[in-house]
Image 1 (cartoon, rainbow over the protein chains, first blue to last red):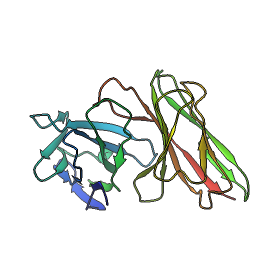
Image 2 (image 1 turned 60 degrees about the horizontal axis):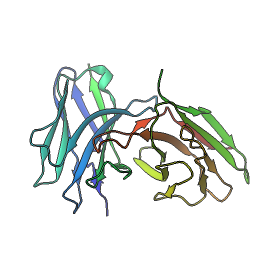
Image 3 (image 1 turned 135 degrees about the horizontal axis):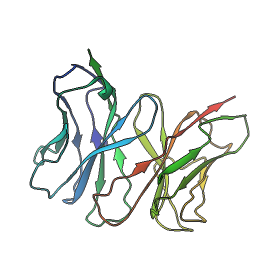
Length: 117
Length: 114
């Protein structure tokens, strides 16, 4: 079964508008972390934001914020004031387990965001 | 500059040939990972390693092999047994200090069949 589901293969947003990229996850572990990465056309993976399962507040990093709804098992990425440089693939990923240990990230299939001038 | 270096950027493989993708990091990270990405797809885990001389299979290890003789280096060999090797390969590393530590990625290697 898919652990990370990103239902939007592609999204369009007007420059300067906000956009929400959806991510739902599946785990029975009460302790987990959620990560979002950006992949421009050049291919590198850029870490954007992290949300822990026990974090009381939604994570924010500059123009990026997480709409974390634990009961619904969703961790949607919100990008405010979109810029042309935000056009890229965006991946949601999860790490399960309490310890800092070596549980690799599991990735969703991604959402391609296109920002229109 | 600290980072993860993958080489080569582009690689071509002939039928029946083994090829090795290099991954070196100078971040003093304990854990290293190899992922495969097919067009329009997410990343799938091939192998990962937490310490020198130890590594674990990921979801799609068949046809691949790795070694971890040094902390800084985690080369991936794509063997002739991997019948569909054309993909984008990403190497990553992270510390094991906190569960919030993200994986940091190299710039990737694009492998194609000749």
